Structures are given as structure tokens and as C-alpha cells.
Length: 483
Image 1 (cartoon, rainbow, N blue to C red):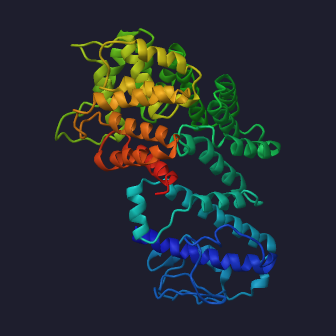
Image 2: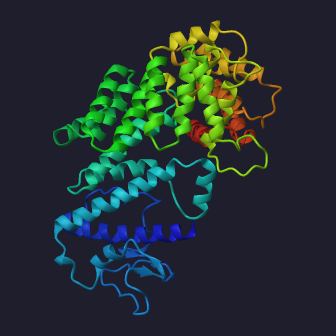
Image 3: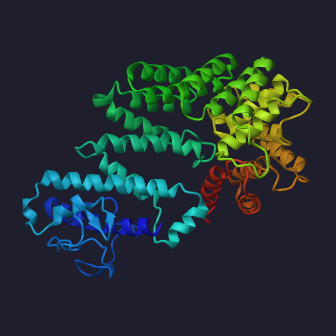
């Protein structure tokens, strides 16, 4: 963290030097992203004078720099490889007017791209990590990052399309996945559509841009159009990784459509072809098989997961399971239970749980079917309160806020005697968040109750499934309340 902080301060000085050249070349009245943000601006001691830190690792603050000492290897600063070494050479004792305007513009776009990606990624860290990096001197200004990327995409080098892809990633994946706009998964659609339109003349047949076109259609609940875009991207891309990325989205589109048979077949294809987390696709295939009444196949696949992760659930056993793998291992145990075998309704609840955790319920046009399924199903549920949590979330998507609040309160009531440290405590934590989100949309008098629910979820629940993901959503909700 300390080395990263030092590197970031070198980045700040480099940016200030490029900004000075940029304004000298193109005019001092130009507005450049980053120059007006406190977390990015270099502190000045007087007009035109940049403060120089006392540390010997800092970047030179004058265009007439002093070369590194002979004892320092070329390209290294204090023994560490400097990614800025070649860039800093641009500010060697050579006169400034030797740099072409095109080169200065390219450097300005390059440093804006790096700054934008950094700020955007840092702003998405969980609140606990944000507090830590603030102690190290970092800032996290999401608006500044987005503006810097917008500036970079207007450049004339290879970073322009990369900046466009970064913006599309944020608006079509990050915003809905982390629920930065609550249940409004379409909040970034207009901006993303504009980016796609502006890129069409040059990247009409690009597989990555077709991928993001599919994401836009999916967020608009236009699943058939999304499938068409994804399948077109698979045909046009010769890269295996891009093909698998699009096939992943195709599988989720079938799951959103509640087409269990096609989803099962698609996830099985990914299980065979993908090298990434095969047990993830195995579990999704097992859930879809069970939901379509292929219970023996669901049990077989769940046993396959358990065999792949034999150390799962054994206290003290050495294991390198990720959080996702641990989650899947416990869910697979539910599907392979012999004392109380699951039925299709039970398996559909597990499928709805995945749609809920990946914030895909607002994108489906089959919420009425999910509502009817939750209301009519009886018998055992995978986790106490899960049925009411899903029902309340779906009712909220349908605009039935009164019914949604009643269902979420029923989920919390059913779990009131279950310890906050239980392995399935994510049901309670997510129910608190969903109820608070609905209350925020009500009149002002409910905002204090919403704040109390969010703070309880943040304070009392630790170590549950997808904690970091929910903490980002809670942090965004608290910010909307002015905290």
C-alpha cells in the first residue's frame, strides 16, 4: 500500500507536468479533467509553483530535470522499477518546444485514461477498504474518473477505444451489478447507447462492442435482441475468451427467461469449454436441471461438485476455496441431500436466489411467474426466509411497494431467532437492505428507519455470502441519504 501511494504521487507530479505543457500548447483556458479535483490536484505553494516533497523518490517538478545518479540503474527509482521512467524522459533538459502538439495531446489522453480507470476502480472498493486507502492518502472520486475517461476517449491513439470500453463496462456491468442506482438497472442505458452509436462507424462489427450492445438489450429486458447480439459476437470473434464471455451471457439470458432446458444445456457447454470456475457452471446446470424436474441429473451434478471439493465443510481441513466456491459447495450439499430430497419448486428457489444475488430480477419479464411460484409453493425452503426475500424483491420490481414491504418484513420476522452469525445470514442482511431501499423511495418520514436498517446490516452482519457486494450497495444507499 505504501509503495502504491508513492507511485501514485509520482503519477500526480507527472500529470501536473503534462498538464502544464498541454495548456502552454493549446491554451490556458482549457478545462482538463482532474485539474479541478482536490484528490488529484497537486498542492501549490504560490502562483505557478508546485510543492516538491522532501522525499527523494518524487518526480521532478521542473521540465529541466536532474538525471538519476550514476549509481541508480536506468529506469529505476530507489531500486524499484519505474513505469514512468520513459515518460519522465520527455521532461529532460531538452527544450520544451521540441515536443510536437500531437505528442502532448497523446500524453494528456494517456494520463487521463490511467487516472480515470484508477479513480473508478478505487471508488468501487468496499467501505472498509476505502477508509484504509484514505489513511494512505488516496481519494476516490467516481465523477472525476468518469470525466477523465470521457476526455481520453476523444483522443487519437489506441487508448480512445479502451476508454470507451471502460465506460461501457461501468454503465452496463458495474452499475447494475452493484445496484449503484438501486433497482433501476436501466440507469446507465442512455449513456451506454450513446457511446455505442458514436462508435458504430469504426467498430460496427467488433465482438466487444456487440457484447455491450447485448448488455444494453438485456438491461432493457429485450432478451431476444440481447441473444442475437451475443450470438453474433460469438460468430465474429476468433478469440476463445471473447466467445466464452458471450456464451456466459447467453446462458444467463436463458436463465432470465426461465427457460430451464436451454439454460441447462448452455451451462453444461460452458462447464466443458471454460477453464474458469467449472463448479460455478456445474452448479447452475444442476439448479436448472432440478427446476425442469430432472432431479436425478441435479443430484449427480451436485455430487460431482462435492467430489471436486472434498475439503468443503470440514473444520480445520486445509482448503483454498474462494468465497464463491464455498457458497456453491454448501448449495450443492442441499441438492444432494438424501434425507430430504429436493423437488422442482425447491430447485427453482435456488435459481431465483442466483438471479437475485446477481441483480438480474429487474431484467426479467417473468416476475409474475416468479411471484406466483413463491406464493403457491409450500414445503421446505433452502434457507429460512428466502422465499419471502425473493417475493418481496420481485414485488418491488413490479411496483407493488406495499406488498413488497410486507414480504420483506415477513422474511425478517421469520429469521428473528436465527443468530446474525449463521451461515445463511445473507438472507437477513439482504432483506434489511431491500426493505431500506423501498423505504428510501417513500416519504421523508421513512428515511430514518431506512438509515437504521442499512446501518444494522452494515454493523451487525459479518462474514456472510457476498458481503463485499452488499457493502458496496449499502454504501451507495447511505450516500443517497446524505451520509
